[in-house]
Image 1: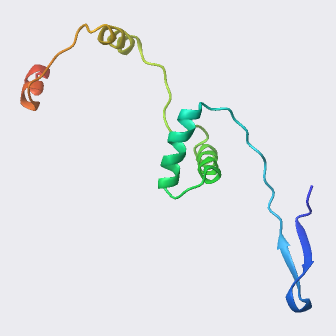
Image 2 (image 1 turned 90 degrees about the vertical axis):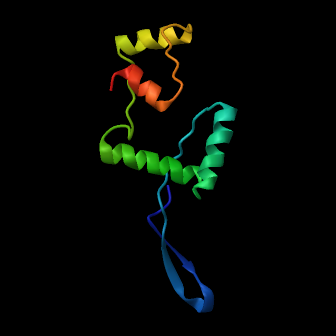
Length: 105
């Protein structure tokens, strides 16, 4: 591995001391289309993929977990998903007022 400090001869015979950063490699396989879309967004944000991964890892470290909720739907939500996927139990609304009327709010 590289030493923490390395010395090299600079311009006009001055010696400079540079700190060598330690890094580790992260490798992952991902669907090409997802990679392409995500990297386009990352680029618009002005970040590199490496910076984005570093941000994610730093947030995981700071929050001692993922920086967003991941959970399985509860039984009622799963039943609703199943029904609506079949086109059942759907309620159509003509307007926002109609929706609130149907929600009894």
